[in-house]
Image (cartoon, rainbow, N blue to C red; front, top):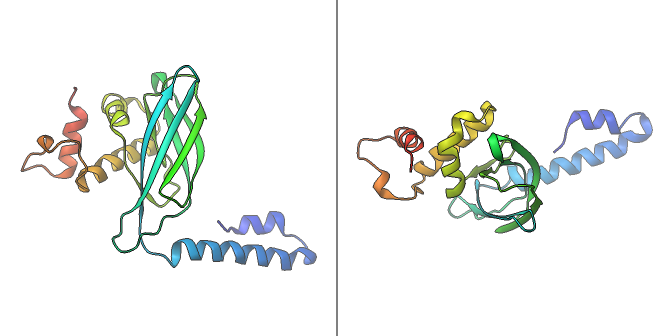
Length: 190
């Protein structure tokens, strides 16, 4: 993205002024073309597997458009949180390509309990929580210290219920709001 801080650090003096304006304008036009002039919100859905022999975490991120008729898939830079033993959270910067599937492979020393896409909410995307991570969060959400990460997890659960993507309709009760359903599901133990 463009920023005035970048202008001050990379563009000082008269000789740099023209170059700085051109770079800033190019960054703005790229942002303008990719976000402002296009419509729609993207959803990111992870699937993942851990190989204990290779000590590799393989993540497949499927990107879809949530706005019917506007099938724009965008490039996103997100924080990927990996939850290890005792709720130790490791955060990796990840690039999601402007295509339907992005595959990522990371070196991880132990089998994660969960992953969370867009952990610090830096990208304008809707994030789905996979079933394995949902089960982990149901049991460990109270132990996660970072308030923003907890809020992102809650929002992921609420969006999943709101969008009708719950695992089973047997979880639904006629009088429940989406927020009540999320609370009940998190409190249940399987």
